[in-house]
Length: 144
Image (cartoon, helix red, strand yellow):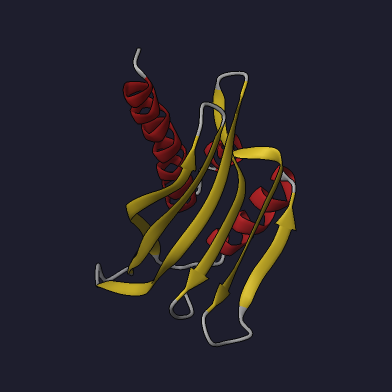
């Protein structure tokens, strides 16, 4: 396999992990959510121009527990749309990527609204053939 094809495969695997994160959060699938983070992962986020935020949380169990609590407290269905990936770096075992977020909510009346937009910055590593998120930082344009 040529390097270019190998990079494409690694890039797709990295994006699949990030998409799995979005699906896991939106469907409240804590098992899937746990599978995307490395054991010693870190995550947190801020809302631009405010002191609002969450985290930093460290370790897979703490991350899943706290993200699960956020999700459990939301009364609408959420849909994380992640787009426009930009690979800052990509090797056989390390990746750094930035992606845009558009977060939609659907309430009980089936009204759809744009909850917020923002950016994720992620660092991932591949261990034993499995890509996992080591760092996931969010910067939102507005409160969620």
